[in-house]
Amino acid sequence: MDDLINTMNNLQLNDAFTLTRLLYIKDEVEYMCLISLLSRDLNQTIFWFHEYFYSGYESFVLIYNIYLMFYSWINPQFEKYICKQDYSFENIVKLIINMCNLKYSFEGFILYNLIKNTNYPINNYKGRPPSFLQLFDPKYRLFLHSLYKKDWCNLCAILKNEDVAKHDVELYQVIKLYYETVHNIKFNDLDGFNCFLENELCNNNLKYIIAIILLCEISEEDVNIKPKQIYKTINDEQRNYIFYLSNYTNIQTQYILHYKREYDINPIIGLFNLKRYNVNDLWTILAHNWIYYSSNTPLWNRILSDWDENWSYDHKNKKINMNNIDEFDESFCLYHDEQTKEIQNMCLIDIKPITIKEFCLHFDYSLTFDFPTSNNWTLF
Image (cartoon, rainbow, N blue to C red; front, side, top):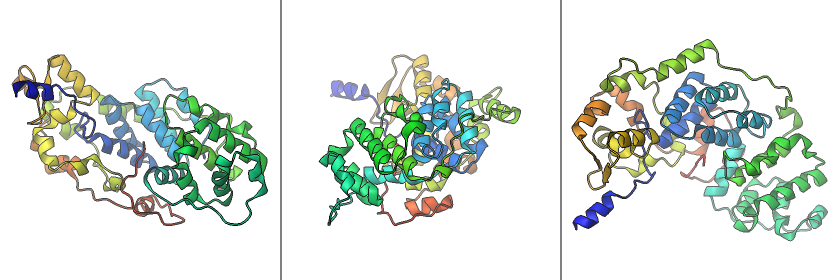
């Protein structure tokens, strides 16, 4: 039995539920990065990306995924600007400052999630198909027919079918040929999209395919293409705010949450299938099991390893086994349960599931047709 317990305690904690540097829930920080960016709230966006970045997570991957699903087809040139940045927080802020001024839309996000999370039946159209379909492999004809008819639900159902979606490079070439031959759209101005299939910031080619389709479908005057675009840089006010977020001088650990938690989690993220829905008692986790659930966050993992390189999990009690645990608590415990209700509720706020219609209305975006109920909406 002792051997079994030791084996269990040496298992790695999975990423199902993880707390960040300031004891927010990781997936909720990701969604708050999105919400604050779409709300054009610059300081709040900087705060959430600061929390994500300094917890040790790949913030460029997050911001690039947001760009792909909300901004890319309206602002294709901005992709080059993202990819040329060095991976520093200052460059993340430069991207945030500029994205807060860019137009965005929900179509890519909606189409991606319809493909991933709904089960529309495929509609095989009756009657004579358009003659241009004879130019293409039969495997792609229904896909192109749906695209031609702008039947987005059928398009999503087909893309959910692996026989079409798994051939992403071939599908890209089919889409390119379709728009060149049927709609006389030249791809010379779409060179920013040609590197998508090799971009290290996102390995989901379905998002690229959606972005390319949407770019070709919108009118040219709606596309922000400025070859010599001058992008904004960080000003003194923003630099001072970043310094404030990073400055922990003379702050005792028990007051860190009081001084450094700036914003509440917004209940609008109830659109997404949140990790908190899979736990029973969030207050107890934050008060008594916080280091267990923080241990997968790169920052906290490094702190644990610096303290005791041989630390291990006590999965039964949701604790960490380590040397001098009392001294560790004195040095690093953030005392979530001893904060004011206002500070605690920044993370503990009640979040109820909402619909995509409610989510879009929050940003004054009107849906053109109804979508099936789903609680599996995601950025990834």
